[in-house]
Amino acid sequence: MLYEWWCEIATGRRNEPAVRDTGAERCWTFAQLQAAAERLPEEGEWMVHPRGTGVEFVLAVLAGWRRGKVVCPLEAGQVAPPVPRPPPGCVHLKLTSATTGAPRLVAFTEAQLAADAENIVATMGLRPDWPNLGCISMAHSYGFSNLVLPLLLHGIPLHLVPSPLPETVRRAAAGETTLTLAAVPALWRAWHEADAIPPGVRLGISAGAPLPLELEQAVFKSSGLKIHNFLGATECGGIAYDDSESPRKQAACIGWPMVNVTLSADESGCLTVQGANVGETYWPEPAVELGGGRFQTSDLVDLRRGQVYWLGRASDLINVAGRKVSPATIEQALLRHPAVRECVVFGVPGAEAERGEIIVACAVTPSRANIADLRNFALEQLETWQVPREWWLVDSLPVNARGKISRAAWRQRYQRRHERGSRTESSSGG
Image (cartoon, rainbow, N blue to C red; front, side):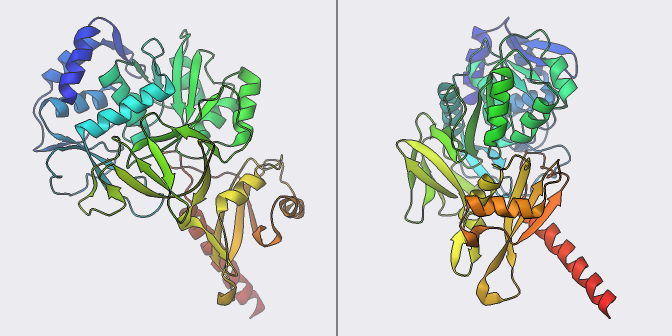
């Protein structure tokens, strides 16, 4: 089905530009892309693994579709997971980003992939005359759903960029007057600070992590470009999208449900997603959270007047003497301080077990703000018990290849740092 749909697109747009690979300095029309995919030699048994940032990724997907193989995209250097063939009808495997635990594979049917692409194109208003500038990983669910599927199933041209570095993006977009640019907050910040957001971008999208309110407002003020916040998940693709034309007023606000997607909250406040875009099952270990057109997330939300407000993840809640707070609530408060550029908050075990956890805040403050000042500011924004007890000022909060800050990784770094400090104090006092 997917390959037949692609053939219809390729036939209808034969001589129109399909892919421009700026790294290889080459362009392909839809007809040329189709011919190149059909010339690829037979490889592997029942699964193919598209990789990389060039047109080879797209060609591998097409070759897999044409030969009826299961497609499982991988990042460069990522080892192929040893899994059995998925259930009948499943043609695609996505690897989760492991933000809530160990990585898992999600199996999709052709209809589920097509439904996600349809929802994204319809909700975001993707257009064939506004090519996608591809700066994010096509192996990740976000890049596959927003770049690859719109190209192959809806004829949205794709301009591939070998690197997201500001100067590379600036050169790749030179001369283009109508572009769509999907990225993650860390890239939007880097481009904004380097004054490298291409003037030809007409539609800006941010996903992978919460988009800081001050960054959205700063970009709008300097360039007039509204960055649209987007919530998605590997298990179902698009969930919610902010289609407003001006910056949001509240950081927790994500937007409205995607077209053809139904959202609700369970008794614990966690988001439930229903729609034809939801994946078939976790593989090879199914779970009750996914299946039958339903995905039960661990995202805490507030659904008000049709809009979605993200309150963090249930698994990240910090227990302080029996009271629980989402780190996202504290992060949003700290980001209102003019000296805080980025921050990540988490809980660590306290010395007194009955008192629960201690709240730790790691913050990037270019002007080296005073910790006492940050604490006093937090007291004005939060309940006293929600104010971090420990503060760690760092130069940066690196993200992974998918644009995410790992809360678990920073917790481990803090605990190792704390243990080293304790050992040093013990030795000094010996």
